[in-house]
Image 1 (cartoon, protein in one colour):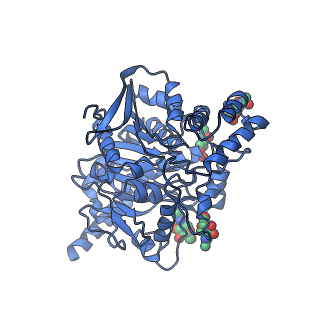
Image 2: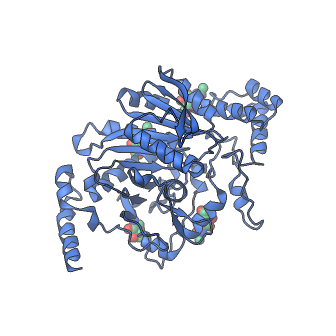
Image 3: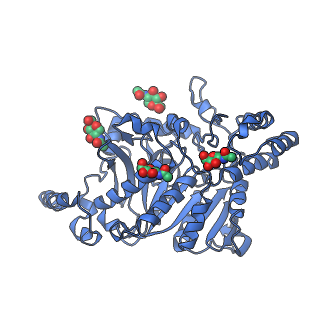
Amino acid sequence: MAVFLTLVLVAVILVEPVVNARYSPLDGDKRLNSLDNEHLVTNLPGQPDVDFRHYAGYVTVNENNGRALFYWFYEATTHPDEKPLVLWLNGGPGCSSVGYGATQEIGPFLVDTDGHGIKYNPYSWNREANMLFLESPVGVGFSYSNTTSDYSVLGDNFTAIDAYAFLQKWFRKFPSYRTRTFYIAGESYAGKYVPELAELILDRNVDSFLHIDLRGILMGNPETSDAEDWAGMVDYAWSHAVISDETHKIIGKSCNFRSNDTWSNNDCSQAVDELFRQYNEIDIFSLYTSICIGDAASSDDKSRQVKFMHTSTMMPRIMGGYDPCLDEYAGAFYNRPDVQKALHVSDGHRLENWSICNHKIFDKWSDSKRSVLPIYKKMIAAGLRIWVYSGDTDGRVPVLSTRYSLGSLGLPVIKAWRPWYHQKQVSGWFQEYEGLIFATFRGAGHAVPIFKPSESLAFFSAFLQGESPPSSR
Ligand SMILES: *[C@@H]1O[C@H](CO)[C@@H](O)[C@H](O)[C@H]1NC(C)=O
Ligand SMILES: *[C@@H]1O[C@H](CO)[C@@H](O)[C@H](O)[C@H]1NC(C)=O
Ligand SMILES: *[C@@H]1O[C@H](CO)[C@@H](O)[C@H](O)[C@H]1NC(C)=O
Ligand SMILES: *[C@@H]1O[C@H](CO)[C@@H](O)[C@H](O)[C@H]1NC(C)=O
């Protein structure tokens, strides 16, 4: 114990003076071992025994306004010193990467379906990489700002800038990761966040002090280009027998998804309303699974429904896109005082109010890039690895939307369309372009790893290796 305390003191003394100075990556590794980090999580209630370390807490991204982002970081299960670092982002806008990515999809501790705690996930992506989950922007999950007006300017740009500031500050806390091979991954609306943050990193990398060793990006059922995403959503609904031939025809004739006032056309508005009326009867995020029928008193039934406003230029809201029954359990878990204390969110007396999606953020979103395809081009030119995958039973950002978007890039094909395999079965199909790989997951909904955990982990591993997914049994 005495030795440990001494180490902590030494670390604090050595590190404090450099906090406001430019941080030199090279001497960082010798000075501070992440073992000594105050954010080490040691007593998470109900946590299964594991061999890896994990950390959680706040990083201040703007001192003047008092903005702090919350993260949860899991070191790799084996050889964390050698494995890459991967940042995972969920979408919304307004939804939590901790509530979805970390504890429903790909983290090592999944929220239990009995609502009492967490269980170990044998398909956790931290078997292959050091996994960092960020709640972004402020207003999402535990992340906050002390300046109320910050909440009225949230948008893509704001989100990228704060996430970038987060990374730079986080590397000061975890200097041994400063020069690590780095990837960004995410799904859904993070289809916008991921390339936007990647672009910012590329641009700022001209300053060698700020250099981040970004090698590639990975995106699942990503919002990419609004016009193509809309067209794909409509054609998918028709080709999967959710809407009639007549409705499909009206949309085709009357909707101009490239226009700024698509909804001023009445026929178009009504036909698109009809599409969502049908989707509200099922789970748009997973066409062939049952919906969660909660108890009638719970407002949760509504959370599955797509909210679509003609006044907004945004694509319809992603209300989660996962299992709405699980969402409730996540809320119960993260609002426990002992859980918040263990994650360094609160002192265990004064509680923070955590919810899986902050709906106000979506309503007020002030800027959204109509297309991130120009960023794809820039990243391909820079030699970054770009992989895009798509669960083929999602109706919200369906496989057709992604194919229309990627098709418009007109990239040369290197490996033509073919199946990829996992455990001797066809997991989906893929096509390899010059600079980009696109793959489907057969029978998976919007949040692919929930439906196909083992396949997803194998695919993630192939991505990190830079080897195309296995194309023989
Ligand atoms: C926000 O305000 C609270 C209360 O004054 C303070 O404890 C906290 O450190 C502030 N957060 C940031 C990021 O400055
Ligand atoms: C993004 O936000 C930053 C900081 O608020 C601002 O300086 C910059 O002009 C914004 N860029 C765009 C493209 O809106
Ligand atoms: C539509 O909106 C975009 C972004 O605000 C703008 O750049 C463009 O000029 C607008 N197009 C039309 C036809 O008004
Ligand atoms: C907690 O957040 C939820 C969702 O944003 C909100 O409906 C609820 O009123 C909040 N509760 C408190 C006590 O602030």
